[in-house]
Each structure stands twice: as C-alpha cells, then as structure tokens.
Image 1: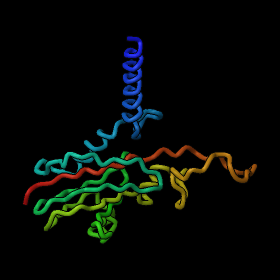
Image 2 (image 1 turned 180 degrees about the vertical axis):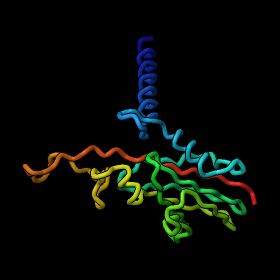
Image 3 (image 1 turned 135 degrees about the vertical axis):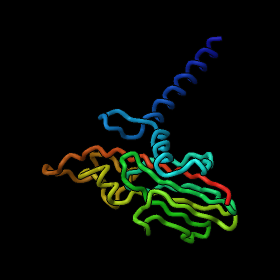
Image 4 (image 1 turned 60 degrees about the horizontal axis):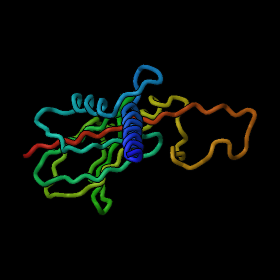
Length: 188
C-alpha cells in the first residue's frame, strides 16, 4: 500500500513539473514571465490564415537561438496547404520545404521571409520543413547578446573552460525564441 502511494505521488509530481516547464517557455512583455506555445500558435493562425483552411492537427514548435529545427510533414495530393511561420518576438521566421532527395521545393527567404505561403502538391509527398531565425529576428530577440554565428545553444561547452580574460564582458543570458509553424489545408 505504501508503494502505491509513493508511485502515485511521484507520477503526480512528475506530471506537474513537466506541465509547468512546458507551459511558459515563450516571451512576454513582462520580465521573467513566460507564456505557452499555444498562444503564439493562436496569434499566428489568426494573423496569417483564414477559416477555410483546416489544421493538419500537428504541433510544429521549436525553441531557437542560432540553430534550426526540422519537421517531417506529409502533404497530400490536390490539397492547398498554407504554411504560416511565426515567432514570439514578432520577427519573421525563415522556412524551407525539401523533398526526401533534398531538393528545395520552396523557401520564404526568396520572398523576404513572408509570414505565410500557399503550396499545392500534385502528388502525395513527405517533406522536411526546416525553420531558422533570420538575422533581423535574432537582432530583435537578442540585441547585442546575440549568439555568434558559429555557436549553437547545445554546443556542449562548459562555462568557465578555456582562457580567461580580465577585460572579458560577462555574457548576457540569451533566451531562445519560440518558433511555430501552423499548417492548414483545404481541398482544391
């Protein structure tokens, strides 16, 4: 009986901890207060979609600093797909669509990082959609604390390693940018 209580208590604590950590990862105007991904998704859908598009029902979310994130998406034949890309800081989000042979099918970088684009596929195809932060969004999000172009948030480096310098400036904390894709479809 005691083991059941311990297990139940552990499961409840674990669930609460995961829920709280996943709940408020995105930025707000209030310092040290976060907001959930779904608010960014809702704003993105309202601003860049219309009611005739149905959600594909999947979540495409990433926390980005100077890296990119990839999502596998299946686009079905003869549907019009709207891909909307947003961030929690209000800056644009770059996205590319490639097929399984790494052929570039579309990138919004060619269109000044347009916040959404409509695509129609003649056949059903599995694609890799990659999102990344353009320089203007990095500047908006990080200011002078922007990470170096060759650094990533998961580089594995340990603070304090390497040469120290008395003139070195302390690094400002760089919080990742919430990036979301909202993919909707309608039959043609």
